[in-house]
Image 1 (cartoon, rainbow, N blue to C red):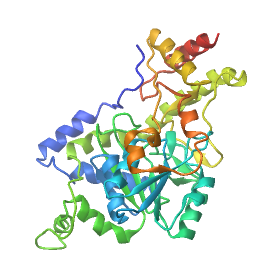
Image 2 (cartoon, rainbow, N blue to C red):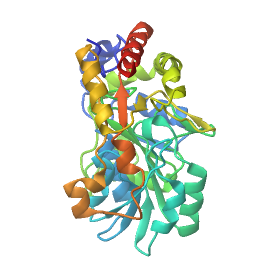
Image 3 (cartoon, rainbow, N blue to C red):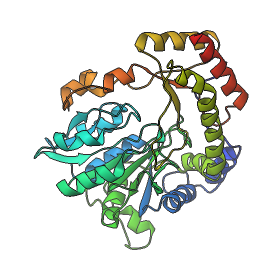
Length: 375
């Protein structure tokens, strides 16, 4: 059986977890949390990285820092995970869904401006499959209209747009370290902060509304409750698991890219024959091989291909159900303009196995079975 996903594992995870336990510092902001945050700051160039319990919580923190209030509108794609919208709905915000580009499955930057109203507060681009949205255009629109940009870069660790790390364009960027991501701590995430003026407020929100971070740095002699907040700190044991992978980030990235490129090469004949669509990576985008997807003719053919692969002991899956078609999406948000591509393209998309440890010969086997289906 070839699984769709297997969590990354390098061999040092248990050693580092044991070190965290032995130091009797297993709650948040221990040695490994600091190491992970420093690694991300140095790798991305962001002013501050705060490790969180999930990308969901990183996005919730961004919504709090952006001061989203009831009735504020937030522009985003409907083709995304529920957390992208949930973080703002919890604040009373209204997700305004805009259609996607069929080539990258990302928010169509050409449709954003028409969706802006006097209630619009933020734009939330989602970098699908680790391939960047058109950030030059998005930032220009945001700056011209005085809007905050919060990047959902859950799938974008080690990806870039024109040489600049994803998650560092907007005021805030949100990473995921869920077990399905390129680098994992089981459940976890990170909030990237571009502007230093937000850092102190972010630390307070992350520490249950207290100024404990300043206390730990010796800046105050005691800490107290100073604002609203919650508990967004991951255990240092989780961070220890993650750090073992960040140390090998380049190796993991290289192994995933090799599989991605093998998929593309082996499935190219089906693309040329017009039987299958393959991913598009626009010029200027450096992706991270987060996933390899292809598109069948329609939802019926996609399901038949999934069933065919399963019969051959290969697990493949579809992805998001567009949020504007879900009960909560209809209750809390609205779709602006025409749904030309979001639903149609989502029903065609199929994700093939992709994880650190997947062997090239397994990729070849998967491609052979896909080709057999179309024969």
